[in-house]
Image 1: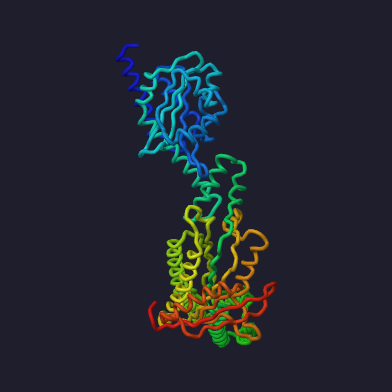
Image 2 (image 1 turned 135 degrees about the vertical axis):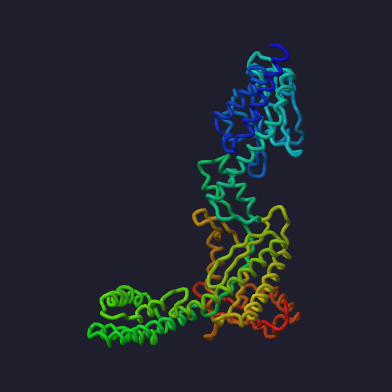
Amino acid sequence: MSNSSSLSLISECVQELTGKVALAAPQSLTDPDFLRDVLDLLDKLMEGGDLRISLMPMLKIADSYTFQDPRTLAKQHDAFANKHNLFEFLSNTYLLKPETIFLDPIPDDLALKYSYLNDLRLGGIDFFALVPVVFDEALIGVIEVYPQKQRKLTLAMIDRLLLAYNPLNIYFQKARLSYDTVIDNFLKDNCTVLQPAVQWRFNKAARQAICLQPEQSKLEIDLIKFEKVYPVYGAIDVRNSTLNRNWALKQDLKLQIGHLILLLQKIALVTQLELIQQKKSNCEIWLEKIDQDEIFEDSLLAYYLETDIHPFLKELEISAPIEMPEVDFYFSLLDENIGAAFENRRLLEESMKLVVGKLNDSVAEMNREAQQIYPCYFEKFQTDGVEYDFYIGQSITPQQTFFQFHLQSIRLLQLSNMISIARMANDIKAELPVSIELTQLIFLQPHCIDIRFRGDERRFDVEGAYNIRYHIVKKRIDKVHIYGTNERLTMPGKIAIVFISTVDAEELRGHIQYFQKKGFLADDLELLELEPLQGIIGLKALRVGIKYAINI
């Protein structure tokens, strides 16, 4: 082939390869046809030397790097099915000092040292080359080249391969992006939104699941757990929220039924239907029941109105010989957005929304500050107020040494946040259509626990029967009473701290004294014994009042 023809062929191959790689979507790189076209172009560029070429992107699996992408390896032109020894060499030795390797021929000493090279020689192959591909001064992949039996590999061929270095660089960048996208999609399908503190562990499990055990991918996610972590639990609740909602409901229903009775009385004046008197009597019975029941269940009343009274009124309005605007007025009361029959419920929900919104903002800010102290897993549960758990420990953040002062700092931050929330609720009272009172509760778990990710529920849960006690305690203490009394532990204007270990109590007592000296907490600290709960005895509590006069 003439020199000009050779240059033309080289230019044609490089241009075609550049265009093909540039236009390819990352996910298409694993397509057998695409990969075959790329390798054929490279073989053509090197003038058909009957070469074996492998493109091996560098991927991170678990905590180490590998050059084996199980999604593409089987689709490449590779005479040897098992390249484990080569991958081990690339990951453990070559990665430390990547450089072009050209063996002509493969030396005896290297064949003895590296079994993969020895396998090549036993297969009649005497030439071997590795070409590193680098992006931003970091190795992103390796090109492996060796000829078929009895063929020769020359430096001129490698020089030609390097003419396609730029499109191959783009190929490896996209290969890594494709792999990372597979990981991201796997996590989205199997997990909830992940927090930075635990993202590393899920990435590790996802890579293992996809690359090593794809048939057990779901199982690998379920095996994620963190051992010996300290839970930090807090709850801010809207006091008497159920009673407040019931009161608002009853006030609205009394107004609605009262208007309905007046409407039926007016209708009775223009029609002689005895049925109207009967329905009016039923409504009066309902009105009495609303007043008498301490907790009123409105489902039966709603069913009666929707299936009996309201259809009757609409039919009567159509059939009546005269207009009855009072019917339209009654139905206008039932508009949930502006109707008078929903006013008390709207005002209550407006107040709840304002308070809980500010509550969520405050807790979110606490979480941001906690992550600066030591990266930890944070879990929040929305109720009428907010419940949350911090899980902190060495297993969650293994790259940063965990010390007890990290836990103490987060507990101090938690107490500070409880004070701020109480002050916030007090400051916005004048803005609220309906008065809302908050109670604050902290539980000091004395021992570390283990938590495990549950793939079916996409959240962490305690691991083991012993650790379940932690969840049992925190779920039962919100309404606990002081021993020998009917007085609830939690009450507005005070922070309650439930504990088992006196060591933990002394730590929190120190935090309380610190805020008392600053003027944020009252000098009314109580040490209380709590009533036994089902399966739980020996609980005690500290309770302290909050001062509102000084900004924290």
